[in-house]
Image 1 (cartoon, rainbow, N blue to C red):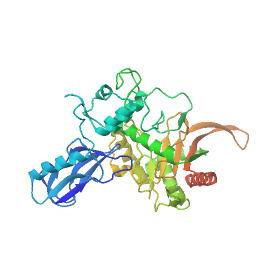
Image 2 (cartoon, rainbow, N blue to C red; image 1 turned 90 degrees about the vertical axis):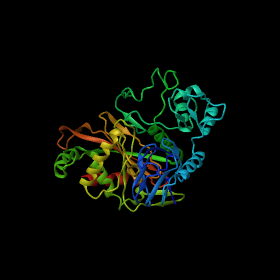
Image 3 (cartoon, rainbow, N blue to C red; image 1 turned 90 degrees about the horizontal axis):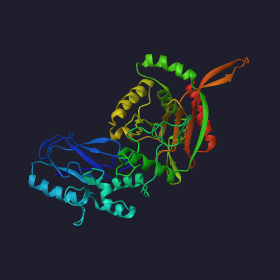
Image 4 (cartoon, rainbow, N blue to C red; image 1 turned 135 degrees about the horizontal axis):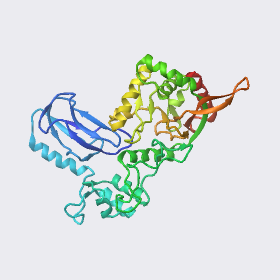
Length: 407
């Protein structure tokens, strides 16, 4: 008998949802066959069978399971009796424990013990969580509800109004929130001005909270003349037969600086820096399904970068990422290219030491060498950095080298 245990899929979540069984209980599987789909706060991942045999479900569909827990077992022969016992044993270890006898009546949601404890601490009522319409209320649901209802949330943090990234500013007053983000009269608990945070936004909140609580960040911004770059993108798009814009060019240029600036791609372990062997560039995307930071692992050519970013943009429209798409970044490029965005200060993502911000190109009037008035196209390019490892002079040198790399 072999156990299929849940791996640690990311550092943000302590449990994952079993959203689909790809192989029925008791059916045969081959080594390498995908058997189940687990959903994290930002992605879905398939787990595979390590050896052939008959698969027996341990965790139930639509239940939450922690890393290291047994998801399923594989036996040489189908043993249905063992499956039922295993499911009962596994259920006892999951955060799906129903409320005690004095809990909600039939038809009300099941409230897990951790969720009920947090409700008591924050003053959230059963009526409020019932209004969420969820069959099972977990601690994370209470955190989101408490945070939007005005009670002290268990985790803090927020995302900016434009594009989902914190610290983003606009040249004019920002637009009204989109319908999916607006707090309206029919809030989650019936009170005006409330709306529960989505799973993706709660993951953003955790990352922001961790970053602001553990990383002493600083910021340096310089002005880039991006007019020549924008002119080059047209020819490059025809050359590689893929859409090429500022995002692709900046990803390529940042990756090229890895040999000269290894500490900008490092991580901090206590009082030591651990440089990365190769650049892996996280790129922020928010196309309406939440903020994602998929990672460009292969930066060998502009065509490969353009291919990857095009695939990620399609995935971002549906929130259809795999966990492997979202892990492994050692530096981030954050995109803030809405027309009016003139300054963006990203947070440094936990596990990295730098985040580069690209803002929208803007026309600027300049005086030419001959005294004539002309215009150019500029963008503010900023670097947020972990001040424990990177100093202001280092950041300025990095940005100067980046400008040279792009010209």
